[in-house]
Length: 475
Image (cartoon, rainbow, N blue to C red; front, side):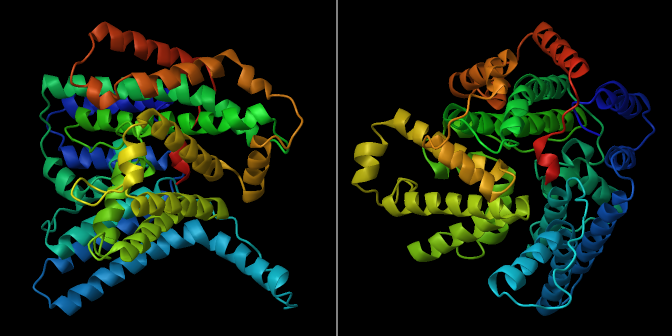
């Protein structure tokens, strides 16, 4: 089930709201737990068992870590929990890719004739949201191990936290310390209700009015074997706008639903496309994921406290992990390499250093005087990274690169001439660079008529067009 579907907006969500607010005797945690499992099982009911298994692993790991065991014993408990979680994630996400890579190594590089090769590559259906709820579940175990939170003794509360449908399949990745305390109270203020309407409506508008028209053209381009010069250049910026509005739209809707049920989910996007450096963009795009890697990987490895070379290594590590977190494929690995090189370069020349750290001539003379140029170059480089990320394979990304330097002679794709695409592309650019983001707009809410009109416009778009899932559902 997806947020922008007719079933969710007109059946599932109203029913849950009626039960939540209308039936006072229903406890919050069990109601949200059952609702969340129905929401998740709507796609493939059998994968509810997988999420339940992950939940059971970390619930009992948390209880064990809360007991008076030795430090060594707790490390073993943590290790077993991590191994089981990553084992499940790796099988569904990376096993098929690993088999195909092994086949290529044996046959194409080593040229070995082994009877059992090539191995059959299994077709494994990736459970929606497995990367998100696995990381969310693991963060709970990490926090209990470090003593940041105490383990909960309520399985219902913990299972509800893991399966919480407003942010289950595509984030934001929330921490137990901010969600579990709110699993009991059903109170909601008029201010929180207004925020719920604000975030949900604007997020829905981002998805159906901007992301979907952009996505149609971008999908068409990624299906082409030859690409026009103009199509290639338009596509890289359309791709990044598409991903931004799709993913930030989902995050806004999730935050709005969180407010509706009494939760305060964290900011996940903070105008990242206005960033004047790749470092700034990274920390403003998918904030909850980069925060997860910062807290549980980057800082434990030493962060930026042990000299430049260790810092460079740590940047490569977290970007590589971010790449493979998104999926198994060479395009994700190349994306991670491109991102890492940009972060290391900016660190080396002083662009990303804080005010207390030494800056060089490049930073003071060029970086601070030509902010517009820096924003444009940052956007262009990131758009190229996103183009690699969204390409079906490396060969297709190379086709795009060749087209960008004029190595093609084909006409512009008709999808890029479509009025809906052009409107979404132009208005999307204006919204990104000239308007406040949804969090800034929340400080001064619009009249109710604005949200009603925008919601009805979105509903019309949903009814007229084919239902399109959010892009991050694939992760």
